Length: 248
Ligand SMILES: C[S@@+](CC[C@H](N)C(=O)[O-])C[C@H]1O[C@@H](n2cnc3c(N)ncnc32)[C@H](O)[C@@H]1O
Image (cartoon, rainbow, N blue to C red):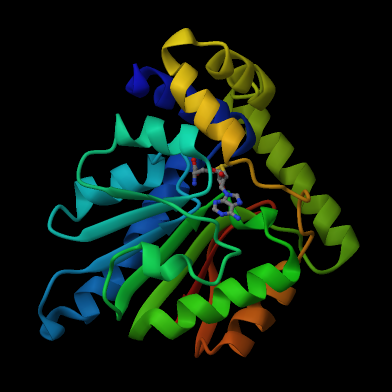
């Protein structure tokens, strides 16, 4: 049942991120680069997925890095419940990324090799995101990577408009504009009687979302440098959809 809901989630997310599978693959390539460079360090690679939701990226990482320790963090018990039923080889942790204590909940010793995220951190207010960047920078080993796939505005307003237009055109070409939308997916999942305990857990643990933080690529690059990353750049882009990589 969880797998069915996660497959439906993936289709729903592709409505907004038409190149989501390629974008996941690029995130995995960045992690692979960092893990290979750390080869002589020995030991098991440690990877944290920030805002893992129902585990789409975590599950793909676990398939590519079967010996790695992979921890998915999310504040939503329902999405974590779906991840638990569909993402073998991943440890799932309920935590709020705006709570500075969250790294303790991962159970992972530092240093980590990689922290990844997809379509999640645009929900964090600028101060909370800056705090998260510092926390992650403090736990990654030298040469470890933070890699975040998300939509983010371009710095000049006219380019931000153009990039949104390019993404919409891409969505039309990819044929995803009729995919189930976010609200329909949530209506369905919340009404599924088999998921009632997870729905109740979600109601009891709701966190407030203030909407998109509106930070541009340039602003996020600056924040990552200020947090202690030595090199930061987008490594993939389609319209306003970016994979931003930062090397510790
Ligand atoms: C659009 S979903 C993306 C999920 C998954 N990464 C994917 O690509 O399918 C955004 C996720 O971020 C999580 N999230 C948002 N704010 C959070 C916070 N403060 N702490 C932990 N998770 C958070 C939400 O619960 C949700 O699972």
